[in-house]
Length: 192
Length: 295
Image (cartoon, rainbow over all chains, first blue to last red; front, side, top):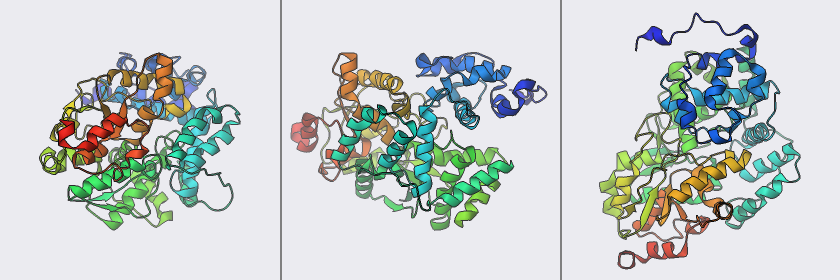
């Protein structure tokens, strides 16, 4: 392939999408809408937009339509689309970038997933490693749902019976092992 | 053979049996594992949706520790998610010119710095490529006879980077299973996603994914896995799925090094066989009985 074939650098993103979407737009601007990603996706049946449709909306900069979809929250990061994309686009990473943007923009059609990721990363910040039971306790607290813990209780009980996990209540005070690292990440990211 | 060992968080919790069997089997094969001191979480699949730089800095912290403790040695990683996150750092710093600089600015607060270049290797890669089927065969004391095994590779050991196997039609486990004397269950589900983290956030979708895999394993005595997330998803929800699908889809799920351990004549207790959620008594008996009963 000639190098210039994938070079769309002279094409500007749609103006209304510039701020929020420009980094994501860059990742998929060479998408030719072949649909190989959709055909490769094990979760496409559960998505409100297929991956191919989502990329088109990104190309068009239609922010509201993109973030009212739950499609990117249904990506399980299996990398089948990334592997097969004939344009070699980083599609799985782009799904991750959309999760990040939706959280940062506070556009939360989806409640569970961002709270789960946040609870997970808070546990890592505190201990340096994941403590599964404490992480789930944090997640349940964040969800404020009386039902969700019940759905997971049977699994938690079986894990405890096997001696794999011990019940742990989250502690929210005191210093965390990775506090300094997390703070620095925030600082460097704010600068760029 | 010597490797730095990065167990990852799951192997201290829900996947204790993966850790125990990996150490036991590698010991028997004469492979020395030096556990990385003060290792921390790789970020799993939760860092990327929160912060890109954090998703690079967390694994890089561990790679920097490897470099400062055992420079030049490969890191052996049994968890596919950890493996991919560690490897991803290498790929990304090669392609993004300012990334390593940013990572090092962050790592400075930990008194660390990273030059790049540490090689992360999946446990299956080390077994298939470095150790090899012939070396494994030499340790077999209880050939597995007619035990039929469905090899399950999952996603992140194979994709997106092509390293040691075909990312769509993986075969690297087959010579190992054959060396153990097992029969390989031919199926097309070996590289199909188990739903991963969706089991927590989008349960119905993940249950669909697992149901497909379990159904295709019909006829096999067990599925073997090389990832704690795959193992958990495949084993922990079988009753629920069977009820939902209206058919018995239960099948034993073992970690590959557990199966290897049985073939090496190790006891279930050494391999923490009591910790598996689905390990059917008849299979357990055949695995422990040795060559006579197994054949």
